Amino acid sequence: MKRLWLAMVLFFLLPVLPAAGEGVVEIHTPQQLLAIADNPGGQYRLAAHINMADIPWVPLPFDGTLDGAGYTIYNLRVTQPGADTAITVDGNDIPYDTRFAGLFSVVRGAAIRDLDLRNVQIDVVTGDKCFVGGLAGFAEDTVVDNVTVSGRIHLTQSNVMTGVGGLVGFGVVEVRNCDVQAELVFVDTNQDVRCEQFMGGILACGHGDIVDSDVRIQAYASVYGYVHIGGLVGMYHAHRAQDQARKGVITGCKVHADHRL
Image (cartoon, rainbow, N blue to C red):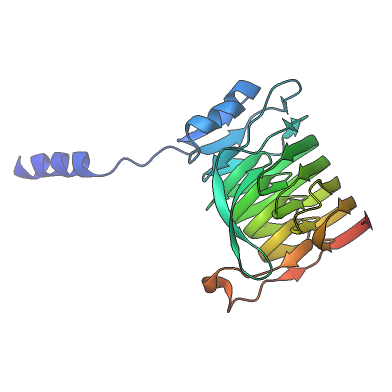
């Protein structure tokens, strides 16, 4: 009898393992996509194509996981940066408190995979320091795998620090098997300020790995200041001390680009 009671006690003390998929929130509708704002650190998986036409979108912060499961988010419209800020640095490592726009604004420690963003229309006009990207304006210590972005990514701005990226604006990110087909445009409206502007098909400015990814872009920049433009990365820059000794990897990528200044 003592052994039986001991076995029962041990049974109830053992942790209950979650069932497969438990804790993952499925997204079927635009309203459910908007609800990520209520729990930006959650685990999400698309379970249907999502059409965001005529639905206002304010870029969200995110530090969870998003599995697109091969589904598409159509017609995302972004006209303003998100409320969150993060620090970006210019080529001289001068820091700036900056705002961001994209599907997400500030992304940290996230994993985003198997997602198609089609007919993205980002058209932001701001007087703030700002970076925009089809997926995220800012991404840090984030893995992006098999994500496709197609559409127009435009930024009109009058401040000193700015950037446009096909996938990500500024950050430290691992990018694998991604595809960007986009029109990238930056217009500087303040001739009294010498801004520093970054533009890249994958990443406007930052550090990390870019592997087996394809870029097809048309790019245009009108700037009263300095411009850093690249097919994959505008400026490949290890801005954090912990990244200084790490060589990033760029391999297996293809770029088709037409750019004008």
